[in-house]
Length: 367
Image (cartoon, rainbow, N blue to C red; front, side):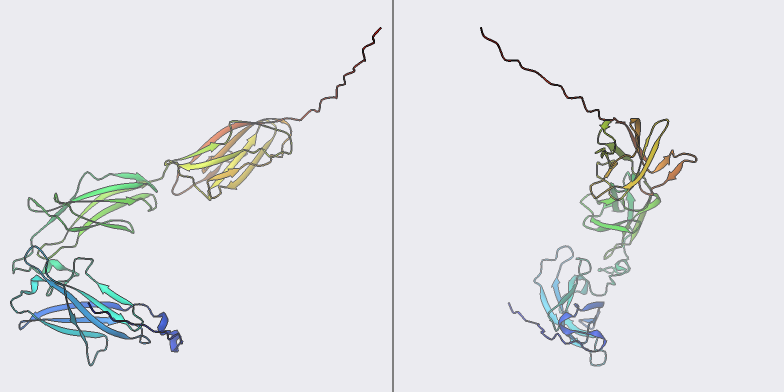
């Protein structure tokens, strides 16, 4: 096995802020391989920072039969095009091998030893097959086979910031298609799963999209000899329920003393919600105290000292929703979470200092 070392200690900054030692890896932007006259002609486009340059590019390939790819991996070095310095080219003699039996990946290295590799998402490339639309080519001269993709009992809704699982089944006629990648998307979230022997692929998506109506989409991009297919399912992300919990149902304190009372805000999974607005209302028929505060990093919000005279009060803690202030109620809305509230009592008592008592001991008189 041979090793090659690429290294640069050049930390000089040149025009346009280019520093060789800080150069990013190369970018392989185009991969093409076409069979012609007994060869496979590779044309690869590699871009990179000129301060480090692209030092080499090569193709690693193996030979497969119609089902298995168990051949020995070999390397074909590519040469830079004399006119277009970003293009690297090479020719592989086919011999008795058909182009459809070749699987290859592409690599490039710059002057600081950073290597770029593209493998067609792990499936490897095939000559004469466009990886952006593999279904347009068939390795054995037959037209690509139609496929169908269908969701299997998909959920219709799920609360925000929870998990939802989706299963899709890929078939060609009555036959399930195994080992094929299926991409699932919900809004901007995407995950890919590979079909099993029954043609089914399952993913679990965190529901982080804003509550509302959405569409779950499953996509099979096609494969060598297989047409692409797609399935959709309506889905609604709902607001998640919450719970406000008071640290004590009944609290007794002296005037001008911290109540020690706090609330904890959690979601339906018991996870604490930080940086959420909570409103306390401490009131009786004569007096009222309102405090707006924010939950801390562990979902707690303290009531603190209540500047009210001695008496019995109700304590109400609200997270969003309609809050009964004097006059018109205050309506607060949280886009992702449902309102919740908790109630308790507070007694503020004046501490009475008892009068001191004295005991008198008289000595015994012995006769």
